[in-house]
Length: 211
Image 1 (cartoon, rainbow, N blue to C red):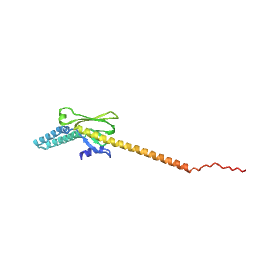
Image 2: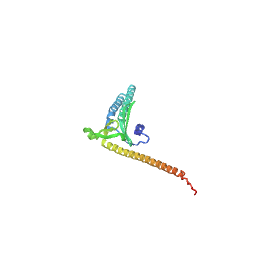
Image 3: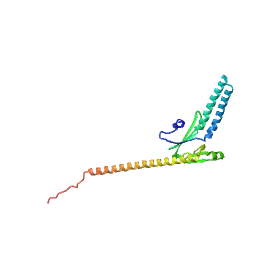
Image 4: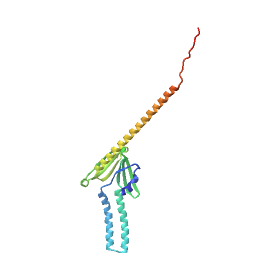
């Protein structure tokens, strides 16, 4: 439900989502740790000194912490890749009024790679996933991806199916053009033959001689 609300606007009408790739959930928990700690601290302070002034201060403090926590959550959650049946949509969220979206079609995809480094990354099975564009040579990367090999396999599978459908579509288009060309040529030949038949035959005049 949340993903449908946040990511649907980036899709085309005939585009289907295969997977939405987020960073490792531990990164999100780390981003929410300090806001949650300060929120709990405010509640403890209110419980220790239950007064109107304390309630007002803690309420304002809690509002600030909640906004801080939402901002950190969106910063984690909206930095994602949308893997579809047509390509990859790389999203980056820099703040409330600054977002960035990059689309790579499978026909413009040079390759997919991933890298897992470090003890924590190896044990937690997360790494950096990268793709490269053919047209510009630009490289896009998403760090802290859980099970990057699985995501890589999915992208390659979608890419193969997309290119196959595109080649079949192009072949059908060429076939239709050839069929139309042959049909027009046959019609032209039939029209030429019909005109030849309708032309009156010329007869040489007969001259008679009297003896």
